[in-house]
Length: 116
Length: 112
Image 1 (cartoon, one colour):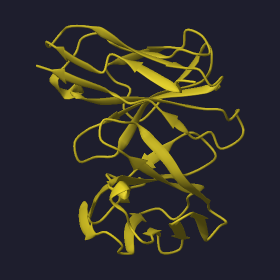
Image 2 (image 1 turned 30 degrees about the vertical axis):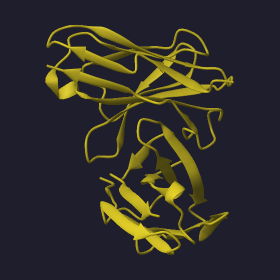
Image 3 (image 1 turned 135 degrees about the vertical axis):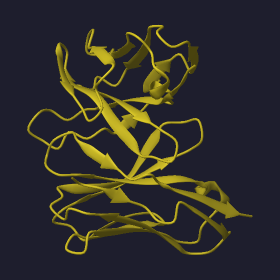
């Protein structure tokens, strides 16, 4: 049971390049999340997915797209990377169904992204 | 707009000391409050979840309290150990949704 896994662990991009951050969970959780954490700040929600095929914007969605490929996988895509997107990105998951407090319970180790 | 503040940003204590970490929030209309632990290079681990109707939660040497009216929560760590060294974050949610607002964390160092 690997929990929540993220790839890659580190990435350096040039401004304007695109890339996809991958996230997978093996706990059969329904909900998945993408957060970013900037130095000296708490986590901020980028996107949320309550189930396969559904996504919701979070607090800071601009510049990102997501895809909930299936129940296990939730990817985050940067179409044209900008220096402001330099951050550590965390994927998370939770078991809760809609209607109950649906809070992230399991977090991945993070992807450290630098955009130059 | 809800804001969550954690002071101090960093704390260093000798092993064995009891300590308190603070979390304050500007809007007292919260649904619940969570405390997380973050180790370097790793994801977050949920430590304690306090529902808005509760005053405190305990897990082992950890005790979290909640005072909604004053917009404050504290995380009490008893008999601290070097293994407690990590960053501790608190987060609040306004309703039963998935939207958590995080504080920036307190980086704790417990010296042997």
